[in-house]
Length: 496
Ligand code: MCA
Ligand code: AMP
Image (cartoon, rainbow, N blue to C red; front, side):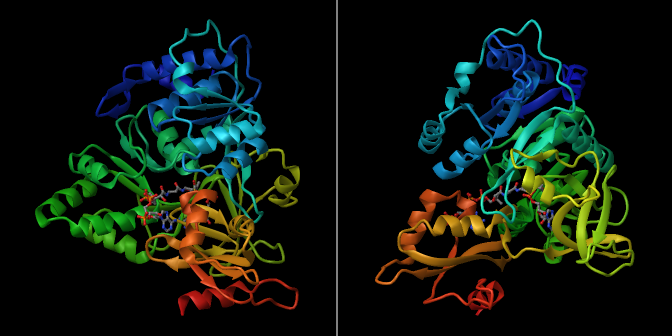
């Protein structure tokens, strides 16, 4: 039986989810997931790694369905609620999805399912059935989940994690950060990325802790529950800490003191998914007395580096390797860097490292060195023992609000606009978002295109976080002798 299921069975009466409408115990989660597994199986004895895409409310519905897919021998493919039709279609086609489960399928998802020939089932229709007499034995080496992630290729790739990979991620975080059954955590991060799925939801359920789920980052509701002392652990991306600092600063003094003190009493607050600016780290500590623990991770590898739970949490640094993770820095010639203070690419090995990009052996092979290390594409140095992230090897990777975005993917979408002849997309540094997606656009001869028109068009084509926020219209793009667009020069235009 899956280890997470066995652990839940050992904690039947503990509360897995708490919300205004009530609580769900681990026993209830097990029952619901077993009944969903039976409904998914129908007459089959094992889904045999069928990819089931799904889009349901965060929290207990999501967990029951994820576990139901797993217990039936399927592969969970979480979808992004805010995706545009083309983005849904890319996921369904790439992962070879033939069944989608959704609570409220919107027009974009319905259209994508029709185009992909995938059958859509409502979540309600799947629920409430009998529990199967027996469920398949699912080996830990089997595929469990596909998360779509952007890279230096134009379209996102499906990163496949096995059950053993996910267990390695969760047990590493349990060990490093002292997760325990008495913990309670708010869940407001999106559930189509590893941060929300594994670090928050997965780890909490792994140790028998309690989760309070929100439909996205509902700042006022979260702050109210923080003030009430609901949580012991908190995990967020830097953009959320920037937003929280602003919110705390805007509160009346008495309330600010109460909320700040409540943050200060939590046993652990973590930041990750993007660089935490030193100023934000310091301001958070000034306000709350709580020193954030910054860590570094990636969809394909889970958490790789972390400041310590006990010991020095250094601003601007991501600390030391997580338990079970091997890290090396490698220079441009492929040679391992032994000394401190010299930058190199972070390469990773360990049991949490993903199996493959789904149906993409070339991309999988290209992401590993000949001796089996995963190439992250991130550059770091070691300074007085701790690792510090210096940036990324590719200018075409953008991090905005914690989301990793491919400039090439966004350029590809913009070029579908009939009036755009050429374009270049880049991330411009921003205090709140880390980077803001920005586009330089060349309009076709005789074409007429204004910014509001282009924004409205982008809203239909891309998820919110991918849409360019700033546009520059230019007569032509600067190119080097090889014909490649010179992006650093364009960045200066935005910063001017
Ligand atoms: C939204 N807006 C933006 C962006 N996103 N503006 C600039 N850049 C953006 N990226 C604008 C909207 O258009 C809107 O504008 C306003 O901000 C509010 O939008 P909304 O969507 O409501 O924002 P939000 O709910 O406050 O979302 C911000 C967020 C969210 C909570 C930071 O982006 C988020 O959940 N990010 C986390 C992503 C994540 O989990 N990444 C993990 C991947 P207007 O008001 O004008 O309409 S990395 C990972 O998994 C690895 C393993 C790791 O290391 O963790
Ligand atoms: P994703 O592919 O969406 O999982 O995003 C992973 C990427 O986020 C990494 O490759 C890094 O570029 C970035 N990242 C994650 N944590 C940090 C951090 N603490 N500091 C800087 N970058 C980070």
